[in-house]
Amino acid sequence: MKKSIFLSCMLAASMGAALTSCQNREEFFEDARKANWEKMVSSIDPKQDWNLAENFTVSVNPDHQTSYSIYVKVDGKYKLAAKYDNVTSARELSFTAVKGTEQVLVSAGVNVQLVDVNGAFGTATRSASNWELGEFKCDESLRKGTDIEGLDLGYVTTMLPENGNNEGKDGLTEDFMFYNGNADGFTIYPVASYTGARLRLGIYWYDEDGNRVEKEVWRLDDTMKEFDPSINTNIYRVQKAMPNGIHIRTPKNKAFGFYIDKVSVQYYSQSSLNNCGQVHSVSFEKDGITYIGFEDACKTPLDLNDLVFVVEPDLTPIVEDPVKWTVACEDLGSTCDYDFNDVVFEVEHVTGQDNVTVTPLAAGGLLGSTIYLGDTEVGEIHALLGGQPGQFLNTETFTASGTPVVVPGQSSFSIGTDMGGFRISVENNGNASIITAPVAGDVPQMMIVPEGWAWPLEHTNIMTAYPSFADWSKAAAVYNYWAQYCDASKVIKRK
Image (cartoon, rainbow, N blue to C red):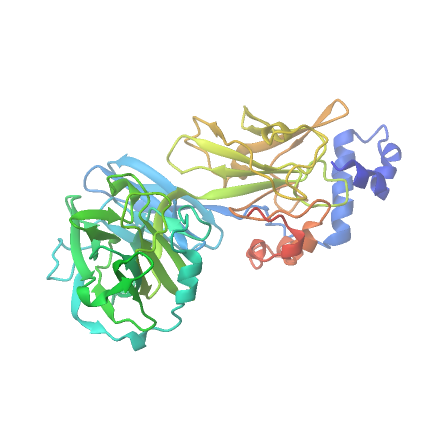
């Protein structure tokens, strides 16, 4: 609770009078919350549960012991939502995704399929691997460069500057494969290179026995060499605004990656396959075009621009990074600001696995507030952020997240149910108020929003920072996109 705001509020000023013999402390705060809320929102959707996470299932029916991974689309990439090891019989696999999700990507190790939520993963999704019969078919003819629109070579230079330390850079996806649902496949357009090696570009996938299959699709040739006086040598230096393209036909249900070959040494888009263990490829998207860059040496820094190509139509990366959620809380709810930054933390959990990871993000309440997951104490939010009660932490400017806390033994955890079982104990003058998942249709003190959410600045009402929040309060199913649109001047910028 913010004491400065508390003293300025009419409700707080009348606190003593409100606490009569027939009204206890918790009832007072509940009445205060409702009174304040009614000034801002005339009514609350009775179905509004203040949670943008929802539980779904997909059905599987393996004919042998199989491990399944479920990926949901987050910010232009498929991220891991659930992982079930050694499934031996027909069952439903649960996972959590943002409300309104219609399809997810399900992998059975070799086969990958786009599945409707609450639908079924097919057991016979494709035929045996065969390049000639269309497993991955490289067309002999090239598509002309005039087919490509929106290519931005300047943006490539901005994202991947020569000799820059580009590994881990914001906006780049690392360690990935791709899924392409387009029946006609996709086209690769090599657009830039700066290397002394005659690189070959290839595509790889896994056959029915789980063996990696590699197929070359394009190579640099000596007509592309130029003399670079700055290094006094010939270099494969290519930069084309309208390159020719190589069309790749893909099967219906298959994940694939890219690699480059440098004198019989391969570097892959999945870092686990690289001998040096380094990231050697990155992907980013702009205007519906997927850009992919490769590094051709084990070194630091990594500029990852020795070969750059674009892909149309846009491909969606598949990464093993878990989906994350943000929990945002008001402490006592009677202080009139409703900024939902008093206790903010990020939650990471892969359904089907045991660990839940909690990362502290912000403490905008002055009172000591301890996070619990069920009966397990995670920690006091100020302490987890390296401070103490009485401080505003990461609500005026952002310094750093707190150290993640791993809570084991949580195989049944679901952020979509009862807000994961999280509760906050707020200390106030020797008393403790407990924040739990709100009742549907009631005034909230806790919300669940997708990862990357920017919480309001200190003393900034959430309805000011997020203009659609009030509408969402009154019509949950209609305005469930509210968290995507904010006034950037009124929220915390984490990067």
